[in-house]
Amino acid sequence: MSAKQPKDEMSFLDHLEELRWHLIRSVIAILIVATVAFIFKDFIFDVILFGPKQKDFITYRWFCNISQTLGQGNSFCIDDLPFRIQSRTMAGQFSAHLWTSILAGFIVAFPYIVFEFWKFISPGLYEKERKNARGFIFIASMLFFFGVLFGYFIVTPLSINFLGNYSVSSEIFNDFDLSSYIGLLRASVLAAGIIFELPIIVYFLTKVGILTPNFLRKNRKVSLVVVLSLSAIITPPDIASQIIVSIPILILYEVSILISRIVIRKQDEMLENI
Image 1 (tube, rainbow, N blue to C red):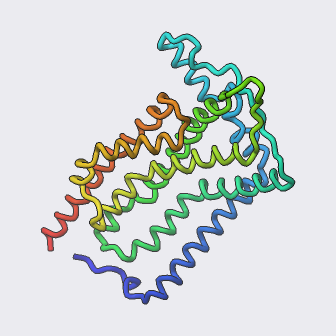
Image 2: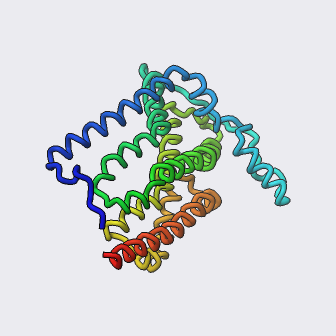
Image 3: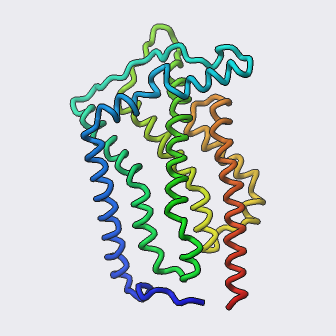
């Protein structure tokens, strides 16, 4: 078996120092992108953030077309989103501007963050392991971006439509605080992005011996409950929304089982070659 790189012989403090510089470079990348996002606030807020607030948002048009295609008429069409967004604190808008820019910086710079993470852990891997994981940065980034898009185009509109139209009395008008609206969007996007990293998480947990494909298969029922619970947390409490969110998560779980099986097979082959 190939030897590991010399960096594996570094002391614990040396490893901490190395990690510190990886983190510093990642933070710098986030701040650079965040600065650009801060400058283009009109596009970030008016087009991206407040897009799902508009009744002609592309997701609402999709659901409307699907409803009409299935012969359900306009049952899934959005006529109005009867709520306004307000800022009730002196620093509310500036704070939203600042933290939204940082969030945009993290999302856009995610591939570089993964790259820095990979540079830190790769010296501790064997040469063959590094070759087998060359697509790690690309795959991890694509899964995260797919999750972010899913959270933005599916989870967020479903949540905004449900909560924006929900009313316990005609005497109450929905005036949502800016921080509440952005918090909902941020939670939906980041939660979906992290959930879509499930295959990557399973890959590493299998590598270190914590998970096996047999364990994942035997616990499908438990996983189903967990998936439904996650769907209930990140979506409004209606069955249709939870089903829509659960489907891709269940698919990712099955993909994770396949990945775990491949990792175990590769490890067995390496042991046979020793």
